[in-house]
Structures are given as C-alpha cells and as structure tokens.
Amino acid sequence: MSEIGMILASYLIGSIPFGLLISKVLGADPRLAGSGNIGATNVLRVVGKKAAVLTFIFDTLKGLVPIFSAGLLELREQAIFFVALAVILGHIFPIFLKFKGGKGVATSFGAFLALTPKIALLALVLWMMGIYFGKYSSIGALIAFGALPFLAFLLKPEPGFVLLASVVSILVYIRHWENIHRLIKGTEGQAQRP
Image (cartoon, rainbow, N blue to C red; front, side, top):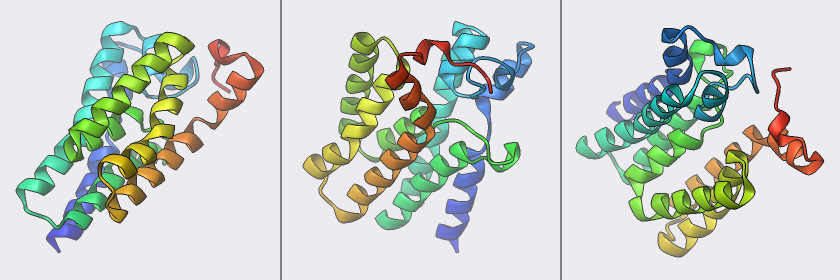
C-alpha cells in the first residue's frame, strides 16, 4: 500500500501547476498568451525571466522530491520507476487543470536527476547545446529527450529503466507535436495561443 500511496501522491505533486501559480502571483496567466503553455518557456515569454527561472526550479524539484522520498522509504526500484512516471504524468496531465498541463521537460529532468544524475546531466548538456545552436528551447528538448532512451541503454541498461526513459521520451515528443510542426514550417518563434 505504501508503494501505491506514493505513486498516487507523486501524481498529485506533479499536478501542482507552479508555472501558473507563480505567474498568477505576478498578475499574469501564461495560458492566455504565447503558446498557452504553463511551462518555463512560455512563462518566460509571457511573464518574464524571474518567473520563468522560478517555474523551472519548482517544476524540477517536483520531479526530484518524490523520487528522493521514495528512496528514503526504501521502495523497490520498479516502484520508484512508477513514482517517476506518475509525477511526470501529473505535470503533463494535471488533475487540477482538467488534465491540460506542461510539456514535461523540467519535471522529467528532476526525476532523472534523482534516478541517475549522470544521464540527467548529459541530457541537460544536450538540451543546452540544442538551444545554443538551434536557437529554440523546443529544439534542445527534442534533442535531449530523443537521446534519453539511448543514454539509458548505454549507461543503465536495465529493462525497467530503459522502458521508463523510452516512455518519457515519447510523452515529451507528443507534447511537442505542435513545436515540431512549427519547426518544419519555420514558424517556431511565432507560437500563439490557439
């Protein structure tokens, strides 16, 4: 029961919309402008740098804390993988926002930072390189999460972990589907709320 309870609690933690809450405190709503997303990138576009940094930090922490807590509770490794998936699903499909959440990048980074720091930091480097050379955060995210299953296979070739990395990669790509279309069309910098 402790494992099931931790998985459910992790989903609820993942569902906390920090980007929206921080923006509301500053008198804005990122859902009403830009891409309409509550993640750090759109918060930066709509609210500003300070709000975006805070959003990234808190979204990362909400991915990290449940995994760290599950480790302290000595949950089985497979259960910890489900905790990681639950918190990421909570961020992407939050119950508090009618299942319309962020794209999962920062929360996934936090989760993998707790699970395997080496893989998370390598993915972060790829993300930063993608932003530097590609000029868009979405390109960095697509490169980093495209590489994630391969990094998992090379550095921690456990079936459960590789499966988790693959599922998270697919989820992030699905959430970036509109970005992919805009990148193909050359209109990525023109993201607007539908």
